[in-house]
Image (cartoon, rainbow, N blue to C red; front, side, top):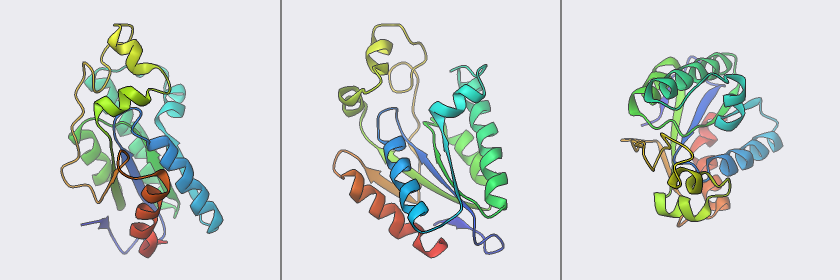
Length: 178
C-alpha cells in the first residue's frame, strides 16, 4: 500500500531507511542518476550531509527523532512543490518515520535491508569499529536499536541483491508516479 494522494501527483518522497552501511547512500546516488536521465525535478536529502546543516543534533532517541522531524518537514515542502525527494536516513524509530509519512502527501518507504553483521563487515566509514571500541556512543545497531519498518512499500535486500537490482526494483515501483 503506497501512501500517494492524487492531488499531488508530481512530487513524492522516497524515504530510504536502514542501518549504517546497508547501502542507502549508494542506492540514493544511483536513483538520483536515473531520475536525472529522465529529466525529473528531484532533490536528494542525505543523513551525513544534513547532520552538517544541523550540527547540534545528537544521537539520543530524542535528538534523532527531532532531526528526522526537521528533515521530514523539508522533504514535505519540496514534495508539495512537485519535487521528487530521495531521502536516505537511518531513521531508526517507527514513530519518527510515521511522523514524516503523515506530513507528506506522497510517501514511499524503502527498507534497505542488511544485517548488522553484514554492515559491520562493510564498515566503509569505520563507524562500527569505533562504536565497538567505545569511541562512538548510542550507535544504531550496536548500543542503540533499529526498529525495522513494519510495512514498507519496498524492501531491497542488499545482501542478496546488487545495487543495479535494488535500483531497478525501486524504479519499477515508482514508475507510475513519474
